[in-house]
Length: 217
Image 1 (cartoon, rainbow, N blue to C red):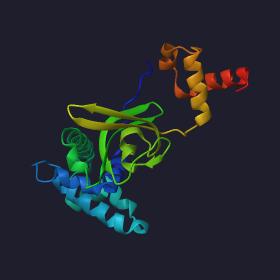
Image 2 (image 1 turned 45 degrees about the vertical axis):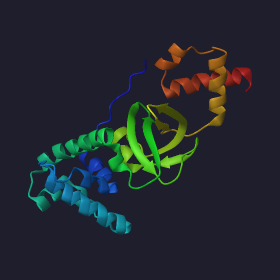
Image 3 (image 1 turned 180 degrees about the horizontal axis):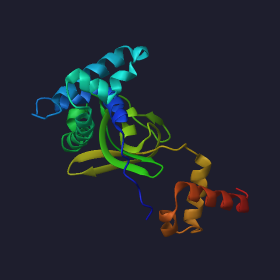
Image 4 (image 1 turned 60 degrees about the vertical axis):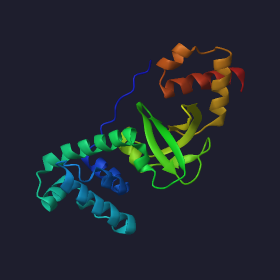
């Protein structure tokens, strides 16, 4: 099976992702965490930038600047940022209802981009998603190094009296012609499932192009 790689965001990217969803930082407040002063800084920064998008000061996203502002060693801040991300993901998994933001549609997202993959992020949206929709989610950059996706697949699951909707998001570009080719080679067994599991997206596309030219599709 094709091996995926866990994406490791740097400090500046984490800061940018947190300020884009600064409201989630409040969910980590008052839990006796050592990074509490950093939460306050990032929350205030994100709130300011959401109101005044054209006046971002990128120096405020630097660990040295933050360290001076909250009187903390910059090297400690880098470790705290990673811990904050892990705590947000854990809270999102264990208490997803906290992320509802009073929106109606609950989705469980998986993200796929190049060799990076992340699954199981809960989010609520005010409008429903449909297949082939484009979906921009900046926070996903700290998970798979990509923020622009399209809805590749929607799966509904009903169990224990509860309905879940799983959304598979892809960081490439949607291509219906490619889907037709893929469906045909799968149906005719021109490429085995085992082979496809070991191919990168680029390698699979090359095989599909070769097949399409041969069959003049």
